[in-house]
Amino acid sequence: MQQSEQFFSNKQLKRMIIPLFIEQTRHLVIWLVLIHNIANAVVFPFADPLGKGLRATGDVRFTMGISLFTTIGVRFVLSVLLGIWCNLGVIGIALAMCLDWLVRAIIFWIRYKKGTWQKFQVI
Image (cartoon, rainbow, N blue to C red; front, side, top):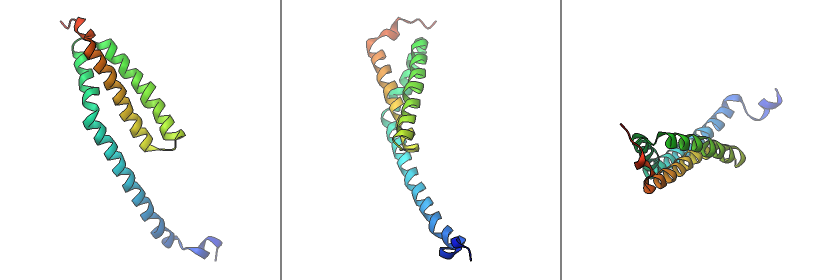
């Protein structure tokens, strides 16, 4: 008998470990859905539709630049910081995505309130 078979057979090990992975995955999915749905309900309506509204008024260069900046400067950098360095994994990446939406929403809201978008002519 080999040393590994001395403690557990392969079937016994599978019966013990697989339920742990299923339980961990279930908790992870619940947290991901909660994080995404809360941010999607609260922050996203200001980040995406407001940006598209500004773009429709002719403020294309600004909205494109901000979207590019927040995607690389906020989402990517925070994904690395939270996901890898803070050891949050996929939860950190989801939080980085939500923070990207938040930063984008704040910048677009400021642009909208200043009224700078009104100086553009669409047609």
